[in-house]
Figure (cartoon, rainbow, N blue to C red):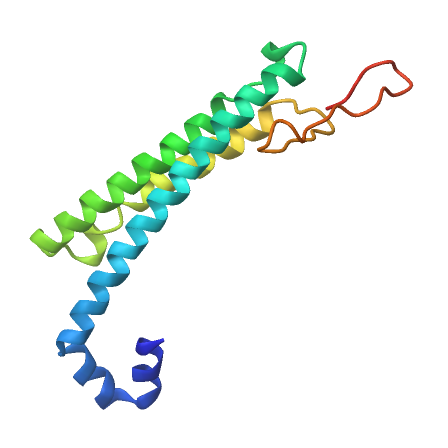
Length: 151
């Protein structure tokens, strides 16, 4: 919000703000908050993945047909992308890379998107799944005409 206010004030205000210590402090705060939030989201994703995997053992009779590998790999790809991003950020600060040398952090993200797209579409999925993080709340759906229970 501070940056937007400075931007709205005009060119002279932007130049003063860029040369001030407030700009440096806000940059560090944004960086630390971003790393904390990304770490929290990835950690939470891993916890939900593990809960869902444990839940599915009790819900499906043929667990071999369901693959969780692609989702686990997606989370690990995102973690590796974050690590690459931070390594290249530090290298950029040290070596002062040009724009044409500073795009490599995008490559792991693009590979992750391709991987998720290909793996997600290539795996068959059940039509309906009822999932809750609280295992006590989850109930099987009633039997349909086919005699099978969908979960």
